[in-house]
Image 1 (spheres, rainbow, N blue to C red):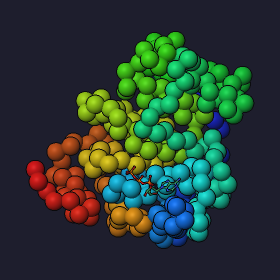
Image 2: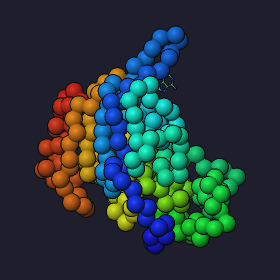
Image 3: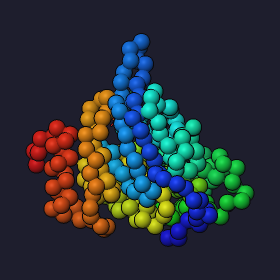
Image 4: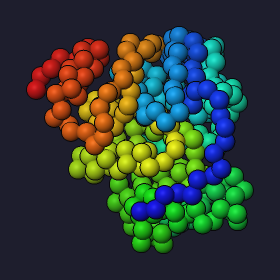
Length: 263
Ligand SMILES: Nc1ncnc2c1ncn2[C@@H]1O[C@H](COP(=O)(O)OP(=O)(O)OP(=O)(O)O)[C@@H](O)[C@H]1O
């Protein structure tokens, strides 16, 4: 695998992401549905932060706000010291569903990432680099229906990474994969993050996945989501799933989520 050619590093002040007292709600059938309540979170450049919380508490909503796909009702969110004013190629999102265009090859799906920024001509060389980075060498000409679920998700990752983002936002990206592929892609994603310059924000429902991958674990309450705990995971990589330190954190996270230990 090769590393993606990096753009000239910009001198960026402060936090990769700074979320200050964010409240958010939706209007649902004339009723106000509070979803986020006084969420404040500072993320340093290069961190890998996992967000855990009960289903429907507001994790994806927070990711959408950070991606600039929606605007908080109150509070503020900055990326690299600047207010988020909308989507930006420096912040890319990978969702649970790879959403590849079935009529385009892997190469042409990845090219879309550049095309959207008008960079296709000048940065075409990055397409092959991104495909290689996610381990899809030899599949550039394949169509999505010729890929396994894990390969399709790798292609979606390549499309996200082709612009050399500063923030990679992952919304349950491994959620639909079988457990074997999921476990190997957890290691691959960590290796990818370690080799690159981006900060990672991951939503997952899987406590072990969060503990295996992230440098920091943020646990939310039920809706409206408030931060219940913010835990630094002080373990080098590669990690061992049976590490007693991680097992201890798993118990703690389960307690915070109000889950009983049944196995
Ligand atoms: N566009 C929307 N309009 C109205 N309600 C919404 C909208 N988007 C999300 N919601 C509601 O906001 C709440 C939080 O949704 P969100 O998807 O952020 O939760 P989540 O924590 O990511 O859930 P899960 O873990 O199950 O994916 C839910 O009750 C959902 O119904």
